[in-house]
Length: 330
Picture 1 (spheres, rainbow, N blue to C red):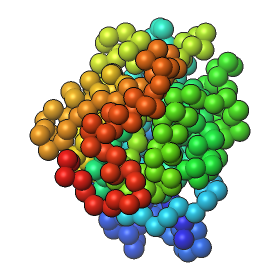
Picture 2 (picture 1 turned 60 degrees about the vertical axis):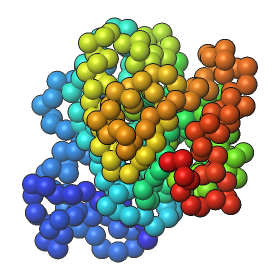
Picture 3 (picture 1 turned 45 degrees about the vertical axis):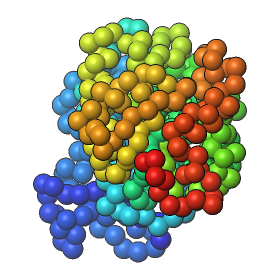
């Protein structure tokens, strides 16, 4: 049975047999087809009267047509809560405006919702010891697939994630969104997931204790099509953006019961330390070299450096099929 997104109805109780939870659709069974006003508002990106930059207009509301593969059974209270938090984050981010140097903004959690939801539903079924935290989507990774560090071949062939990817409301001609048909490989994603594929063998081994998430769901492009990181944004807009994202991260970390957050790249590590300072010492934050091809250090041998760092953090036992118990270092 494939279960579409379940949302908690905090305001309306219009669904006669579902006073606390709203099931939008259940394939093969009759589900409640009405959506409460609050859930509809969240799915549409928040208040329709919000101030939105002309470069960041919400796209038309759409419901996924269904996954290309059946997700495994999940725990709705955690998995669907994680997804609902992401929708709430989208609603808050839709209210922001981004001036130059930003020309176009992509939000793959919106237009690539189907594969993104399949990723979360399949691999975020229970509490996680470790969260690997990226900064924001890359143009040939998550922007195409809806999966963090989501290099197309890895997403399709190793993670086994499929789904329809729609066209963003505003698409830059130099950065078309082709979904799983994209032929451009993202080096960062290939390096990142390639390491864990080599260590774990099967994705279920990795996701038994770990999960991968991005602090910010937005991809920023300059008018030329050049990729912009949050660090490239004007200070005021950057801090507004990251303050919202950091609050959402704190809630997600608590939801998943994470004990160690590994920031992939210096900026992700720094912002995670700031966001999660109030959860210390129960939640630790450490860093991992970013696998970007723009990093000379990463180009000298990222996999070897990453393996050494994972060993230092005591994480290698989590990433082998022989070990299923919680390591003493966490």
